[in-house]
Length: 243
Ligand code: 4GX
Image 1: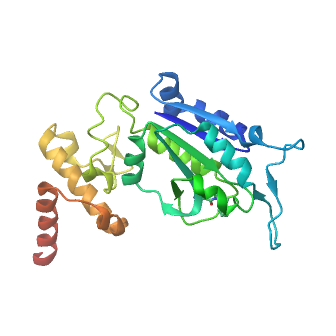
Image 2 (image 1 turned 180 degrees about the vertical axis):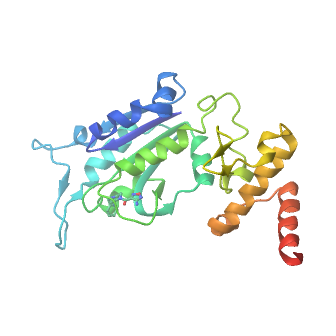
Image 3 (image 1 turned 135 degrees about the horizontal axis):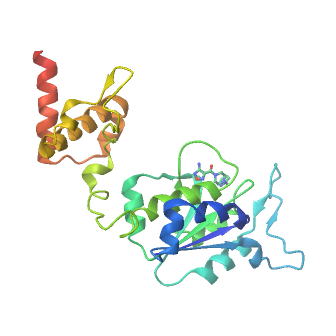
């Protein structure tokens, strides 16, 4: 997997891409990430990349001719071109999975008031990272890169099956505990100390389902349930009605 990030601020990416799991994934060659300065594609002698909006108004607009020559230079036959924008569909784990299966992503980061609408003729998909307004597409591009990187085989460990099933995608994590077994009178649930792996697995799954139901019921609308989850959910409903 290769990710090319088109930005006016390549320095923004230096530290984030060298740290932690993404940094290690790049070092191990699991993923290649390149940042490309949009200014390299400026066409006139002033190296101009933006201009005033037709019709007036505040802010500057990234020029379509510059962006299109940049995208066309970078793009190959199997590339998928993404524009980070609040007008896109909001990123979720299903989309992250889909993108992680592509061989080449080109991510365009807009700034100022955005890009000349005609640049979008070279864009395959607009993606938002959430319904709030940032100063540019750089943080969204990093969010996308991070989320995609952890799904690349070998990045998190040898076994990717545990993290990319559609069943686990829309469930919150079960609660985690480490030593000591009791702290300020707060105990670790007995079952986690029992060594009974099957019971522990079922306890965790029930906790995940309950937490999602209470904290983020909206996630369950996107979720597929396996047989075991349906059984646990029925138990939860049954307990509620009859106790
Ligand atoms: N999820 N931004 C894009 C430039 C812009 C301005 C107006 C289109 C119209 C964002 C987000 C986000 C800030 C990136 C504005 N583009 N991107 N930028 N939320 O807020 O992806």
